[in-house]
Amino acid sequence: MTPNKVREQESNDLESGANRGGGRGRANPVDAHVGSRVRLRRTLVGMSQDKLGHSVGLTFQQIQKYERGTNRIGASRLFQFSEILSVPVSWFFEEMPNATREQFAPPGFAEEEVPSLRDVRQQDPIRRRETLELVRAYYRITDPKLRRRIFDMIKAASKVQISASGNDAEDGSDDES
Image 1: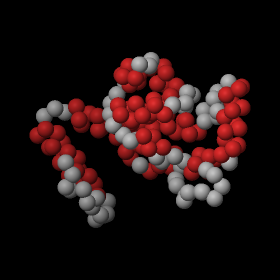
Image 2: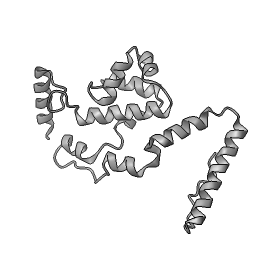
Image 3: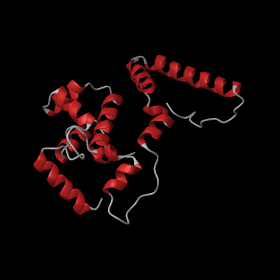
Image 4: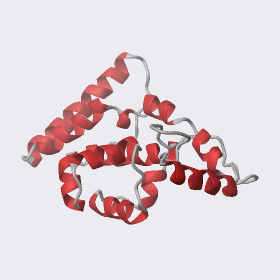
C-alpha cells in the first residue's frame, strides 16, 4: 500500500468511525502488534494492567484496548510506556510480521524476509508463558545465595539432559549470572 493510499484509508476510517484497520471491530495489524509488545513487556516486568494504567492516568480497561490493538497508541503515550517499561520506543515495533511491514512499506523499500510473529513465538522459548512465570518466580527469591544455587541447579540439570540425549553442544552461557 502506498503512503498516499494509507493516508486516504486513514482519512476514510476517521470519517466512518472505524479503527483504521479495514473495518469496524478489526484492529490495524500495526496497532495490534504494538499492543501485543506492550503486553509482553508489561508481563515480563511483572506489572498488572491496573498498575500500568494508574501510572499513566488510565483505567485497566483502556490498557486492555491498547494491548488488543482496539485503540491506537499515540506517540506521547507510547513514549510514556517506553519510559515506564524501560525499553526504547523502537522495541514496540520489533519482530513485526513481514506481511504487516509489506502492507505499509513504500514500493521498492521491502525488507528482507523475517519470520512471522507466530513462528517467533513457537521457536523462541522466552516468549512462552511458562518462561515468564519462571523468571518472575526466580526474581521473587530474595536470598541471593539461594537464587544462585537454584540457577546452578537448573544449568546442571540441563547439561545432564544434553548429555543423556547424546548432544555434546554447550550453550556457552557458563559466564552468566
